[in-house]
Amino acid sequence: MAQITFITSDNETITLEGKSGSVMALAVDHGIKGIDGDCGGVCSCATCHVHVAPEDMSKTGSASQIEADMLELDDNVNEFSRLCCQLEISDSLDGIVLKVAN
Amino acid sequence: MNRIVYLLVKNGYLSEIKYLQFCETIEDILFKKLSNKEYHMKKSELPDPFEKARLDKGYGIMNDQNDPVTMLLRHKDVRKSAHNYKTFQSGAQPGRIVVPSEVNIRDTRQIPFEVDPPLHGEYRAIIEPWFKRPLLPEYQEKLTAQISTLVDWILNKDSLEVVNEFALPLQSRALTLLLNAPFSEAETWISWGTHVFRSEGEALDGDKANILYNYIDEQIDRALKNPGDDMYSLLLSSEFQGKKLTREEVKGVMVLTFAGGRDTVINAVTNSISYLAEHPEALERFRQEPEIIGKAVEEFIRYFSPLTQMGRVVTEDTQVCEHAIKADSRISLCWASANRDASVFETPNEIVLDRKINPHVGFGFSHHNCLGATHARQILKILLKTLAEKVGSIEIKDCKENMEHLDEFERKVGFNSIHVKFKSLT
Image 1 (spheres, each protein chain N blue to C red):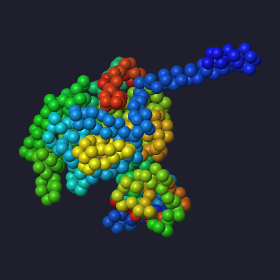
Image 2: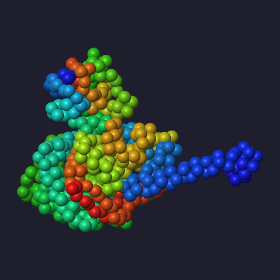
Image 3: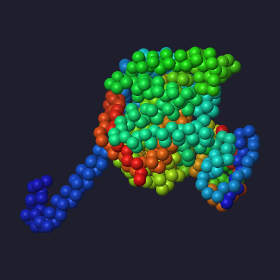
Image 4: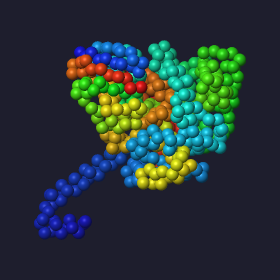
């Protein structure tokens, strides 16, 4: 079980609880604005781009090469960027804060 | 070789038994090679004609109506160039970024497809919510009902030609949902045949394009007279930079909607059927693990790459893969080649139904990624789910491949016709 907080581009803060699956799927199921997850989580669309709160980067880790290549060509990319389809929900993500990038 | 073996055996360095074992090994290799080749002759397979050129130099040259195209073949180059709209523009002369070029058969600019950022984004924002409607449950219910009816119908037939009797009606009926048009309109679109701009044996068919243009003109007139809740009416009431969209702009969006999702969807549907015919275990897997269907759809799109390539016009002298490209010439982003790039995809020539990391460019990439992708994904997801529920096996009787002739490359994109027999799941 993990509590995950999303902050959307219009500064709405939503905290959701998830047990398993990807963070992207959790966000899409709850209609988080700016997380579309068009490709269903195979890292081909970049419509689930988030900025991880700097203090939470140790929990999420950094992007894989394929994910980083994808992010490199996306708008609003920074050192805290992740595609949240690549974040698997587990206890270790409990309490993280994600700012929706687009 | 014979002499070496003779001398080895004669002088006792190689026993006859060892020699025979050696021959057996060779035979074994040959057998494996041959059966491998046979495997490669599966009807559902789409070979990758770009591999050598992609590895050797990274590009290919295709002549097209005296306006040659440098085809970019590597995943990285394709994505970078798709993203770089300033050097590789879409907003050129209408029809020029399409390969083969359509400059001789149309003047209408397709919108937002042939517009560059930032205007592109403004146009796209007008229609994006409309093209996301396939995510709504009621849209999916209607699409499921359509596909279910069609699949029930084919189960009762002894033989079925998939392209014209299944994929085309499926695509046309589904399009009535995307346009929110009456179901009966599908009959008109089916009567146009499988291509809107292309017809068999002729890459560019101006007469067919006129059928579409005249039809869209009539529909715009109808919507002007009696506004409703269809896509024409939505566009006619929309504003771009504070002004109502012009008739030409509305037409540009509608032409794109009709043309972009025609033979692409038909090829994706047809190729899916032929794959399932030769891989009945995939149907069984969808029954057991329906949660992988979303990933399977992405994998089908990668492998089939229903749109081989899309062009751009180069705005300044530049180079790709150390190859100089002059301003005002054309490049293309070869999605089909990028999707088989072994530096990105493991076992690129195999369909891995639950491929987990799949950064394919089958729906294009960056600003101009496919507007109809949400609709196309729903069609394929619902199709796979419905087939898994109802179909036990599919037998291919005969087929004619649909080959694209791209100068130095020949690419199979699907079938001109494929006769099959469906057996229901009992």
